[in-house]
Length: 132
Image (cartoon, rainbow, N blue to C red):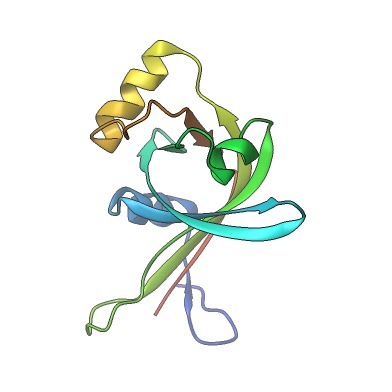
């Protein structure tokens, strides 16, 4: 086990992906009007990509119209005595346009949000995680 200078376990990619699969709400960070924005989203891990849906006209929807580099974070830092961890991804967000991929995202997330927003996929090439 490798630890960082703060004594936290540094997680390997497979451990990070397993932790991502265990949750369903994360936070996506992006810029809007040159300002940082962080929003919670329902998500799923499909293969090794994060997928989520935007709401039409939202700042997230607008920001995801171009291939945007985003940060995505999921954690378990609750008040219980279990393990605490955090996984952070920096990746390119792209719109899902293939109907088969959209259907897979719908199944993975569990439902479409009202309003018929677009589905977005975030690559996970840059991924890091820590656990206490």
